[in-house]
Length: 179
Image (tube, rainbow, N blue to C red; front, side):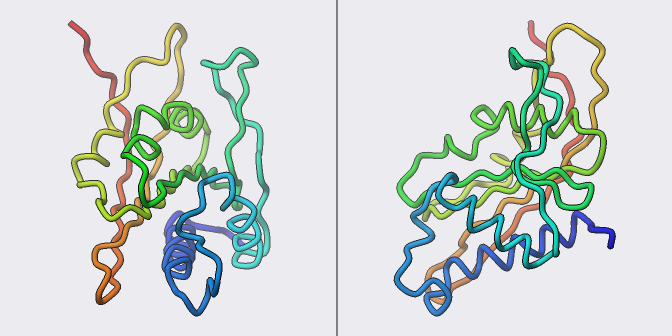
């Protein structure tokens, strides 16, 4: 079965909304968990949703000493990186600067790729904040083939009534020019 970026975005949308649903989470404050705490739950969810999900798959990462990194999940042929911002965190955990290595892994992956951002904060990113993922400096020496990747940013628009939003972008990375 072929998996599409759209199907993966929909799956993560369902998970994000379920994390906010008190009937689903019961006594667990899942919306206060960090990325490391949520990863096993996400892995299990993706396995059940798609029937297959491979965690921590090796990919090329030239900025690392070993020249290899790992993407959080491989669903079909789609590489997925996952990041979380807890309710009282600053914007940094989801920023393009902090997710630099994740962006590089997705840019250099030869196939469809998705960066999933879960924001549990009361102050969501603006579209301009997500647009910053387009500006990225050089990867250094070498002739690197860059692939576009997608960003799916999930956030809570309002508490009462609960309303959720999603910003989707396809990122064709362009080099920033330094003076």
